[in-house]
Length: 296
Image (cartoon, rainbow, N blue to C red; front, side):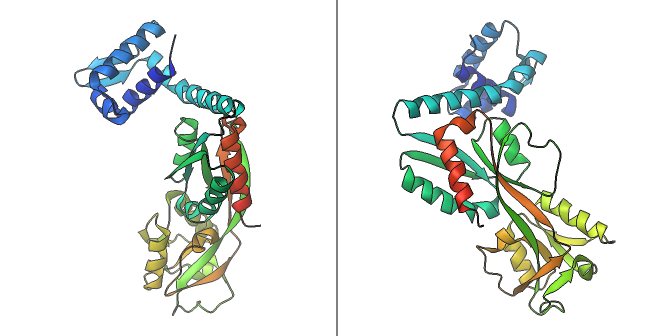
């Protein structure tokens, strides 16, 4: 019989490429990892790893098992949490992953309300931008992912439970002394000759697409995932930027001015989870609080 602990070990070996590195990741010994892999291969009835010197490669069977492991472990977590809630333990654990501007705005309000309503629920938070955060959810490394996307993207999230939170409009950011600093509204084309400061990779792609639709390719001189850094660079007069309005809520734009940009560009902010995990009370409560924390 394949056990969950053996699947976790297999995933660690696959991710790190060796028993020693997997042992360090899992906080156990290398012989313990080796022994659990032997047991797993016996249970599977076929080799799962090819050992070549110090490196490990997955066999076809190993690749298949790793591919299913995330969903299996998520299902087990859902079962354990739901059983605990039904048994009246009033405890739960939620692993939340969020992009930075969500971490500084939506998440604090939601988690404070969650703690007040359910003090026995433990929530951990790590940061990652989509699509990495969505990959973490599918791989079983988190329970709720705060994510965003620009426009409709087909079946990108069709296998997930999607809780819409808000629509976030991009705003322009220019230095205080800029020729457009006092304008009520500017078009993206008005900024065609400017030096640009770009954000995360997904936001960067969106910026390029919007500018190209307006007939120019932006000259991106600086790129950073850190929104305060973007604002600081603009404030120092080093360029212009467009940022989600949500990113501006927790940062004082010293030396910079916001302007409304036309045509309007919006991103959809959502909370995501797996269908099995959506039934877990602690996860459902987290989704509810994130929804309430979103500005209307």
